[in-house]
Length: 417
Image 1 (cartoon, rainbow, N blue to C red):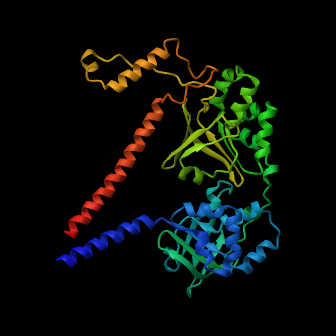
Image 2: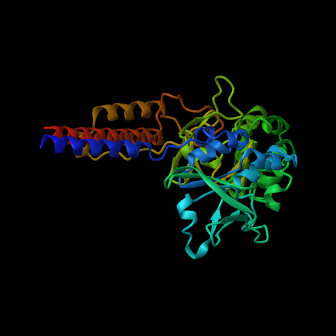
Image 3: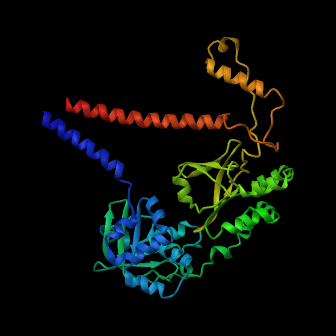
């Protein structure tokens, strides 16, 4: 009986470990075991595609050996064009060697990471996979006239249904992916914003040489911009015009981050983010939060949501947001007076909350400021409602995790008895 229980315990513990590690993979480590793919591995790192691959699950990498990479590099493409070409070799689905020879109807169309960037027009970011008679499998970019001139060589690494690395005979030719890509210094970031619903913000930025210069200085090293859409920014302009010259520059710089952040990076990271306006004691930061596919930016004043991607190509990313995000250094949160509790409720109210409410009512006895005011933000010691809510949510998540661990421990103890 004891042996059976121990066996069950081992099975449960093994399943727990498998659950913990099932989503972990590192493409550079997988490829490092194969010297013939070292050049391909190097350029995945150089183009920053490696971390993008590591953040995704259910993915297939079409690897090229050193000879195939040499033929590709002989054309002297820019690093930005190389990124586009290699991103076409990352399929957003799992294709192990077995699945390649079991494709329904003998052919499949797979989306790629190149398609996911939004740069590829139409279906040019898709790859056609065809299983020929005799076990031969061909690959071709969908914009290549249906030509399948690259073939399956071997399976390199497979973590079933998570990541598959297979070697193909040559790079997939694609007119769109191979097109010369302008370097970051040649990008017209305000032109991109103006053409996609952020013209008012772009025009305001162009009219402020100090802020515009800061953006331009950071393009080559990495830049992420969160531009408010035209309607909310146009409604905000009267308040912007009331700011002093230095505050106008800081406010505009607040919408830029001095590092490249792809959308997948933003979706996988939570926490504070510095901006172009961050300078010592002047924090001018905001908090990135994500839930599923939705990414929000929060300050102590308000919250904005990312609604679209204008460009996402290392080292520049530009996203649209649905509101004008307000830095706490320039604006105060609007305080909504809480309704007076009924007499029978007052006795039951926690003393801590009551004293805190009283303290706030004393300090805010004068007219409460609104987000429109051009005044310093509240002290960091004051916890706005959304910050308190976030802390409560975090506590609940942490509590749930602890409960799960305790439950598993009790189950193990039960089977050991």
